[in-house]
Amino acid sequence: MDTNVVIVGAGPAGLAVGACLKRAGVDFIILEKASELAPAWRRHYRRLHLHTVKSFSSLPFLPFPKSHPRYVPREKVVAYLDAYAARFSLEPRFGVTVKSIRRAGEKVVVETDAGPFNARKIVIATGNNAEPITPAFAGIETFKGQVLHSAAYTEATPYTARNVLVVGMGNTGAEIALDLAESARIRRSRCAGASTSCRASSSACRSRWSASPAGRCRGR
Image (tube, rainbow, N blue to C red; front, side, top):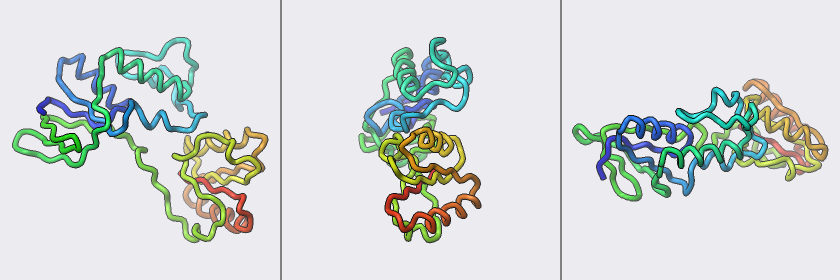
């Protein structure tokens, strides 16, 4: 199939590009390997809120509703993205995985499991957190508790009566640590910051809690 632009990914960036191209009268196709819009936002932990105020976080041509809080929660972001796609008649092709991209003369061929797409331009809008990256900490294999990436965290309930170490003090780590700390059923929640501290704290986690299978370490 021939088109002017192939957009890979139907998250916020892909939808924003699609809306701008539609306003400009440029034909395009959005390819998304998942079965729904913004899959990353739908699977994030339940407490998640935007970390920037809504006035700086909306997509082109459609601000967040005035009734939304200053920092919009995850479920309202998902609803906003669904409404955004409907507003601009954006209809991604779901369940299509891009296998490779190659240049063929003046065009670019996007090979997918649904066949090839020929385009003049490609926009990669797959985001930077589609695949979890777990750092390798020396000796982590000796830790007897559970090691869980933040991508698999949803809420504090499964960690009732557990000690939890959160490795990483970015937005995700801080918010997960707060979620755990505010749960009265969590024994203790600790968050390690910079990489050097993370390694030291990970060692502390192993030495202090290795004898207890109740321990939990969480990475980002």
